[in-house]
Amino acid sequence: MPITPLVPGSTFPEITVPQLGGGAMTLGLAGGDHDWQLVIVYRGKHCPVCTGYLQQFEKRRAEFDELGIELVAVSSDCEDRASDQIAQVKSTYRVGYGLSVDQMQQMGLMISGPHNGKDVAGPFAEPGLFVVDQDRNLRVMDISNVPFARPDINTLLLGLNFVRKKMNDGYAVSGNHM
View 1 (cartoon, rainbow, N blue to C red):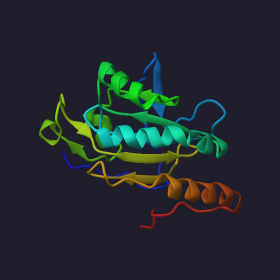
View 2: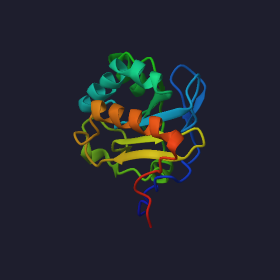
View 3: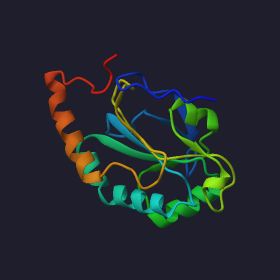
View 4: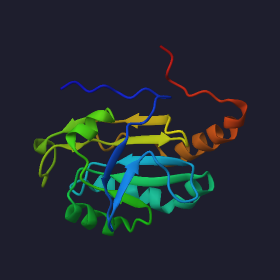
């Protein structure tokens, strides 16, 4: 099935997944004192690059909080596999699991099969990053087909700080000219 990429400025799809620790979380719907949400899609337990990337976000979490941006992460892993990996990350942000192939397609993610990873149970999402505003509009996105091509967190923070400051000036979403 062909993947249809999301368009910046469009409404982020309503996707709900189980959350580690209980309950469920809706991606793109910020919680707590945050009005925006940064959704980090990671490959899963089999990916040590993902573990390192998630750890970098944990170290910088306070800076995202200052911008009013909640960090969340999600993978297609089952609960046990996700719990094992997140225990290594020592994440204090919310983490979802069980992302389905249909949900991956709704997000326009690249999808790989078991042949693309060691100790993989089934199809999994390649990395994606989505910043969703208070109206569920997609403000920033990055999709990759490999774990080693992801946005630099320093550059991402600088850019999001700029965008948040420019919001009052009517800063338009980039990348949606048709």
